[in-house]
Length: 446
Ligand code: GDP
Image (tube, protein in one colour):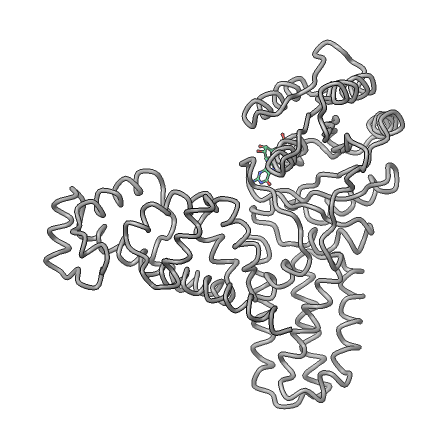
């Protein structure tokens, strides 16, 4: 997962500081050296690293740390604040035009995830009650138009295309006329990509820009390509002028360098991140939450938002109540399981809970992810239990486990595994709901 090794290294570094009462200049220097190496290893642009370290160091040798009784905490706070600033401080939104339609032009190299991101963005707007239309203006890649049409039909969003037209500017222009006459308030133009930046591509994009005057030009780059993504962003920004960046494939094994360098190098904020091939896998980019995630402080807000959009509102309320009262039963577990699966893998969920990132490693022996077949088994196991057992799993002793396995046509090991998973989930959810309570109180107290 992205940032995992960076997060590990930074947490190691801070652990070493924890034992210290007051920090000496040597402590600060050693810490800065380790942060520097961690960032370079995460493929962050070296100039960005240099500036970053300079800023942290200036603050770390200052009053706020030296006079602090908990210098490690003070240093972490500074790193957290500077990481947040590095990524753009606050969330950057799409420029919505006061006069509809808002025109968004998606640009990027081939394979970056431009067409997929166009679909994801359209779906996000649709969920917000808007009426998007997508325009297929990639006239070079033969399958591109078809790909966009397939995406559109999956999410029930119209796609404007002219299969036999070889003039991307004309297609874009007519697509916008279509949007006007069909009351579409968001227009997303999928433009052509190339393997590398070339003059013809830029020329075409500039012509489209001049014709349609987009409110937003979004560059799509692949996080896995690290500093190349940053270079691509820099040249698109110089040639075309960008309003924002969509960083895709954050679910992959990238080191995070692109996410940390794009804003600092290009001045362009990351507005969204793609974290999967599914059309729901698009998240707004929050610099502060990302910084917390890197420092192992978790990202409970994103998790709660994900839960809110994936769960049925009524169900979610019932569930929250059950958690709070500690009355969450195996029946609830089953009915929630399918909903929870919509959030993504348990592994990715754990990464967002404070302190749980490390738990992931400890749980190596326990497979937290489930597929469809396993869910069928779980269903059978739960059905084979008595109502009393479902309410209070503590009473399920060895002989009950055997009976349940027989009754459900599964093995005792599977029953054990389910009970263990249920326990873990209960603990996890309790922690989550406590956090939510805590957050509410924290805000009120301010
Ligand atoms: P385009 O050439 O830029 O239009 O790229 P596509 O939209 O066709 O995407 C290229 C490949 O990347 C496809 O297989 C997509 O499913 C995949 N892809 C796009 N975004 C993501 C993402 O956020 N995560 C992952 N894992 N794959 C992605």
